[in-house]
Image (cartoon, rainbow, N blue to C red):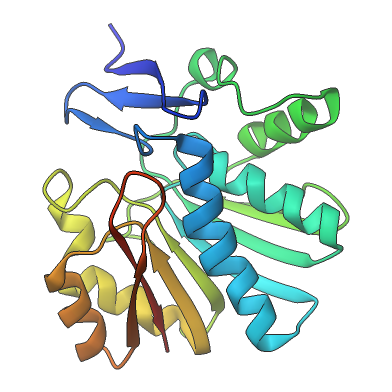
Length: 222
């Protein structure tokens, strides 16, 4: 029996409940609206507005359902932004589950979502003319990350009380080293310890208003 259960969140979009951890992959208040707010609006759009660039390199911690990757790939297409997207996942969601998720509403978006999930692991691939994907089937603790490689970090691991190893100082330090100067780190999490750790890694930390149903989130800049 799968430990993943499909649920419907507050905005009508699906998420998955990991029954072993009793933790959802996205906000119960709305999976899609949370991802758009935290990662697209406060991460990608913020960085693009600051830098005025037409290309960007992103590292996602937690590919999960593929929702963040889908939204980012759609953004790259709609705004003609070239994106190199690296995403880390130790426990990929199986095909019989991800094919049921309701994140796509057109044949084009369905095809894009399928390409993201079916892309070979550990090998850079062109998903579209604007979007290059590298899916890393590994843990954050084991994966090799080149220093100064990424402009934006989508930190979308399970919550600290459910997956504490993902929020330890050594893990955050590894990610911070992979960030370029002026790179941006965004996460739905707003824990005080995370803010202190990011500051000690010489990142400038902002506490922002959270997505619907959540009071706060964090954005940090190197």
